[in-house]
Length: 449
Image (cartoon, rainbow, N blue to C red; front, side):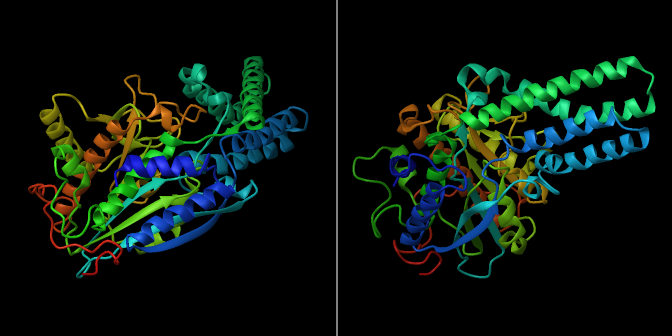
């Protein structure tokens, strides 16, 4: 079944999959049932997370910093130093969110239940390598922050807000060190005004936010991951059928072909909840099951694949860029060159600028695992219909998603073919699509003959 069919059913069954909602839980059950139907060993990983961090976390921290800054202006110097120290403490959970590690906003926001879903295709022999393919299935809520007309200003707005949050304690320190400097008082006043405006706007966004369908973000990534899982399980076509269908085009044959998995390789598919809430699902999994991963296990993260041009991200992060794995980048570049030569146009290309919000790829990358994220962006670098009510199936097309599935499947196939010799091995040939070793029957456990 192509990714488009998975996407159509997902978006039809669930009008939204908002983080920590009942729909998110129901969608996780739907994903589990599909994976079990293909014979995967499926595990559910419950965890707790805030309902949202973007609209709530910065205002909560901002309010604390704002109050402490005002208090420092009205108390003796000794208490002013205490207020300054308090402002630094208040920033700790927010910095944990921005950097993807350390204490985060879970310490100050109420928590609700969520879950991730893991499907395991065990190695047929002794497992020498593990490949993890990830996609989040939850959705963000639309607000004025992501209105189409405001899209060019989202990054400047967030930069301004975070600058006010981080700059206010610095101005407090200067006030303590230079109590007679009038310019410092002016700077502090400007920062507090910016803080009030930006944090107030986020609270308005929180109050007016609406659930969205999330066909692109990230129904598309979820659908492509499901299509890959089906093809690796050998359920891409009936047992004994020849590659492709009678009269099918070469592209259809490649799309429908099973993806061969070397006997020494274990594959895990991870569908994370609460990615839209500071990557909580991925972080919880890495703190649990992820601890058992062999060192060097590669991660392939799929996010927002339904629109724009398919890109592979050269780095992850928000404030600080963390480079993607060089070997994975080189392999993606090989696939990009091949597909451009075949089709006479760009199908896949690199993307370097950081996004103003991180992807799930940040967590494993920060923990030392080779990671590469695939994401769709238009020519202006924007994610189509990003976090907006127009993110529905009608804004996407099956032909584009078929091409994306083919590109990602080709990359994953190459990664699997080289996995048995390690991530830094010399290039080997890409197995012809549709030609594979014997594979599991549809409905039987993957990895069992």
